[in-house]
Image (cartoon, rainbow, N blue to C red; front, side, top):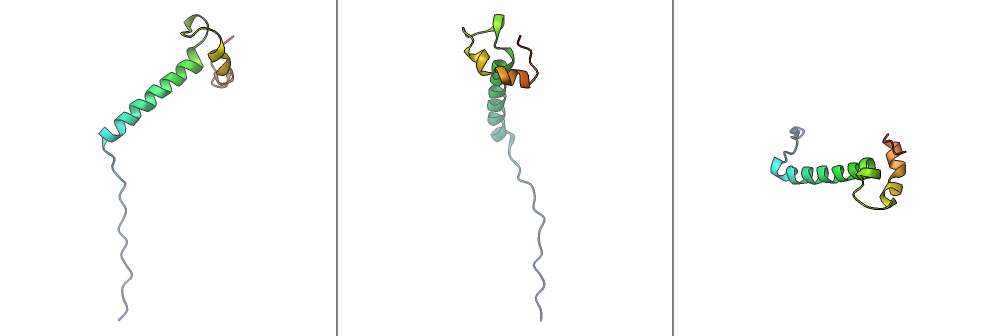
Length: 70
């Protein structure tokens, strides 16, 4: 008597609880907002930091993302 082939069960997606995702989502949001500030806003009259180091460091990224700076 031949054996029947094994039956494959459908795999279900892994469910991740919201309380495990929420801290990472908040962290990503904070990092994203800091990046947006330094690339898009940190210049001239609205500058929180003196000098032009941050402006020059993010200058090409600013133009790549379409932020005016001159």
